[in-house]
Image (cartoon, rainbow, N blue to C red; front, side, top):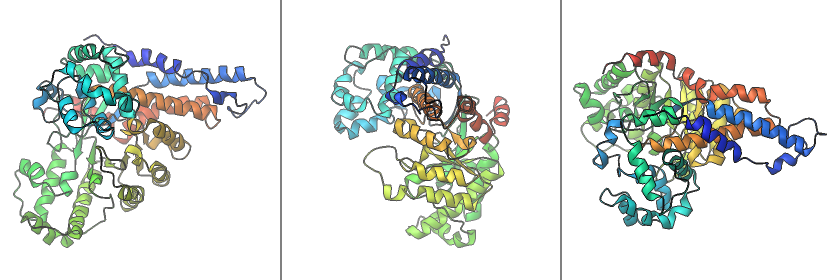
Length: 483
């Protein structure tokens, strides 16, 4: 397949062209100096700032620090795969935008029909059309719109363009389309994948491109005797046996993994306390015997096993990625619990100062609180993965505030967080635009010089990730791996 550098050329020009002469440029103090300059001088100077920053941002490669991509070969088995709702153009809508469709009022029957492999793809537009105007401008919707334009050449989704979209989907979904989308079109050096396909660590066929996290949530939540215990062959009769199970996973995959990941924040706060093993031995035995645990017993056991897994991660120099803030899906958002995530993050950093924590998704909508954690604690890092499409304007606000508050070497600015690969392209364009706007505004408002703004681009887009996750060493190991 012919390589195309669409992002570095076409989208850069589109992004710059969309800016225009903004009204705030009429302020004589917008650049923080030279108040005698005319408005036309200011506009010309600001346009030059934005052109240089946009060009640099759109030409700079990303390291993508969070995805849930299934293996490429699994995409070719179609809708028989549990993570592929439909093997047609609607798969682009099946992760994240599908939630906006439901909250916009799409009936569940229409939703199921929209993603059904039994329905002709060309007939599906009629099901989406009543809700399209309501969802197309959300971050989820914009990522899909950009993807339709860049992958299939479709500027506007409509009854007239559905056939072109479907033909485009079929022409792109060919062998090696992951590399084409991620590297050739999106300019991503590598992705970090938290696999949702069943195994705690995926022995991927593309180890240098789809680098893998070790999922630790089943090591402590439950714990999951089947998924984590059975592959090891270890007979589990006591807590110490379960410790051996956790050891087995790290000893087998720790040298290949880039991090460990837990999304346990979907079930509880991240307020894990250090609990000694002797305090939970009897509780573990109850769990092993399939007896019910009280809420207090469950927390004690989870807390103990969480720290056992985290301590193993530290032994292998693996950062610990933790979900914070907003929930995927719809009609479930316990904000009274999520608001506690930043305070709990501070406690984790206090408890284990030698462990590098990566707090994901900017803890939206409580991101100012999380910035204070990154400013205060050496071992606290913040990942903007997913955030750009949850709320692109808030994400720009986050990054702008972060860069004048906390050290710039502890922020990670992109992770698509998708199961299907296609919308990663659209998400990356949104992220690049947000980063460029952030830096342009910081220069125009006098907080950054243009030189400093240009210097910070490489670190926040790929340099920080390379250092935090020790990617230079991982790349060497993964190039030689034989599963």
